[in-house]
Every structure is written in C-alpha cells, then in structure tokens.
Image (tube, rainbow, N blue to C red; front, side, top):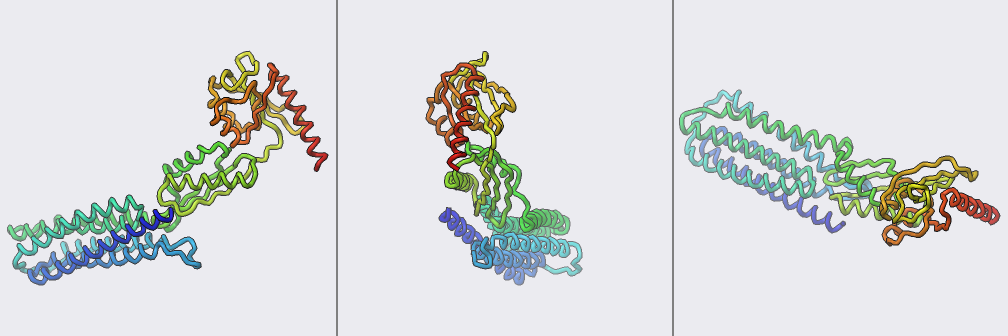
Length: 403
C-alpha cells in the first residue's frame, strides 16, 4: 500500500513537471513571435500561456507538498491539491475575462506582419496542448488527482484559445475579422471548466461526503464478512487524491482479539478494492444479547431435519427467564449454504439440527458468526427447545456459582 502511494506520488510529480515545461516553452515562443509579428491576439495568448505557467508552478509545488506529513499536520497536506485546483480555476476565470476584453473592448488596430509565422506557432501550440491535456486528464483519473485534472482542463482551455487565435489569424490573412465572434465561445468553455474545478475543490475543502455509489461499494465489501451483524454508519471524505473513512459496526459477540482481527481484515479488504484510501477507522461494538435466539431447520410438517433436507427454519426467541417470547418461521431451500446465510442474517445464537453441516465453508461461516450448532435426536422442535432451555439453565446456574 505504501509502495503504491509512492508510485502514485511520483507519477503526479512527473505530469505536473511536464506541464510546467510545456507551458514555459509555449509562453516563450508566443511572446517572441508576438513581438516579431506584432499580433495582438498572439500577445494575448502569450499572456494566457503565462497564466498557465504560473498555474503549473502552483500544481507542481502543491503535488510535492501534499503528501508530506508532520507533527502539526498528522493527516498530511493533501488538501493543498484542492486549494491549488481552486487557484487554477481563478486563473481560468481570469483567462476568460482577458479573452472577452481583448475581443470586445480593444480599440487599437494593429497591423500584423509575417502572419504565416504566427499561424505556424499557434498550430504547434494547438497540437501540443491538445495531446498533453488529453494524456494528463487520463493520468489524473488513474491517479485520482484533482490538481492534475485542473491542470489538464487549464491546458485544454489553452488549446481552445489557440484554435480561436488561429481562426482569427486566418481570418485576418483572408481579410475577415472573426476573432470577437469565436472568442466568446472559447470564453464560455473556459468559464464552464473553471466553475467545475472550483466547485469540486470547494466541496472537498468543506469535507463533502464520498459519492453514493462508492459508499454502497464499501458497504457491500463489509457485508461479505459474516461476523458483521449490522452497519450503523459509514462516513467518507476526500482530501486531495486520498479518501478517509469512518465506519461503525456491530459485530458478533466474540473476544476482543477476534473482533480486532475482523475489523483489520475489513480495513485491508476496503483498501485493496477501493483506490487511494489513506485510512479506515472502524469503531466496533459487540452484540450483547441477553436472551437466546434459536433456529431449528424443519420440514413442512415441523419435524426437525438437518441442514440439507430442511424446507423451513423455525426461529424461537427465549428471554432471560427461560420463557419463549416469540416463534416465527421462514422458508429455506434444501441447501446448507442457504440455511447458514439465513441463520447469520437472523442473528441466531444457536441452530438445533439432526446433524452438523457437512460443508466446511458453512461450518467456518457459522463459527465466525458465533453460531453454535446443537445436534439433537428429538423429532419435535418443542421437545428440542425444552432440551436447550434445560441445558442453558444449568449452564447459567453453574457459571453463577463459580462467579
């Protein structure tokens, strides 16, 4: 797990550094050729690329710092990624504002020279930003990194802006002015991307819950453990690329050592199946049932059967005074695993049967759930319950004398 986190961290740093190199190169080229050609749109795009460069520096710094843990910040600085993504979103808003201002409020008419050079540079910029933004976006999804996603969206916005600049330059070359009509579309794309990044980062900073699908997946993982009788609650939040879980469970009334082993296995299984889990805190409570809940597999006539030949499961609740409080019945198939599964779901303490189950997996699941299998020669479930109550009464009396 630690090795995986380190690998993810190195991958994020690699992509953030690559973004910095790309934006540094494009900013330099655009500034140089903006001065050579006198193109105002190319100069504006150079300024836009400079904002990308600043954003890339922020991304790289935040990615490097986010995984550091100190005494003052024992849970890490993961949220620096989300803070950085919000800052990048603000840069996106600023870039959109600059495009709109340049398109609609500029009063200067500037003659563009050597326009072919400007178009060539913008084509190079368009192709490079398109390829890198798509690759970085895939990497951000794989690494679950909000800052890489924000940076990829920012570079994508640069690609769109480059496309608009090319349209404007070609239009200028052909004698048409198309910049201000197309740039508003680009600005809206940029604002949309910025808003998504901003709201996502803000929600994480405010500890918004994990999405419903992920919580359900975690719940299904926990339900695979027969020792767990109930899930009281699951809470999850994100910080940067990582997730933190708080879970409260009711587990079968076993020893502290066994209960601790169970929750350790649950935590490991969650970390194995759910990516980027930093920590899983599980609070568990043992079930303290004062009475006795007994299940008896029977046929349709009420005669006691074994696990593989029964069609019904009678459920008898006995209170502390050895009195029967309630008798209910559920249908079961002639299958040991079905009997075991329903017995565990019913939170039984004991199953009274003609024989123990033959399937080792069934025996193991029942043992882990703390369900005792009691063999009886009785045919009537009423006679079997009497037998159980007498033995339980003697057991409690002996234990009372010892205490």
